[in-house]
Length: 165
Image (cartoon, rainbow, N blue to C red):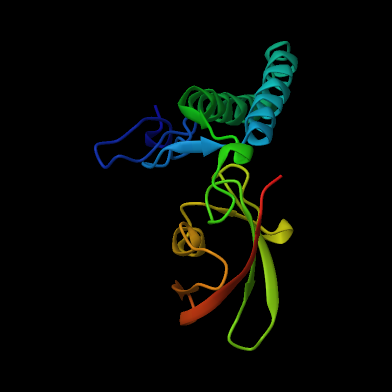
């Protein structure tokens, strides 16, 4: 048998194994919408798994392994989900579920939504509560200046507005 297809003592994965998607060590806080998104993705994966299970093709096997791994991840995320309703948060400070407008040192304004890890998408302004900026903003009120460590170095921003849905 070829050594490429068995797990060696060095911990290498065989051709039929994939590394698991990592689960964060912090709580999996989600908005009600975020939980809906998790369930929708889980259902998509279940449908795809059923479709792939009906096929016995070597090209399909790898995709099936990926779908099974992703299903394990989404099942775990749903099981770990702690729903936080933004409407129940104190509206005068930044908490999970808030929409926050900040002003940087150059005067530019940016708006971010504080959400869970699986909802985070910087392209749409959704940042994780556990991200460096998310952590820096939590607990701040309008007018507060908060510092945070960016990849480009430390900076400070001012909280201009806090909204909740």
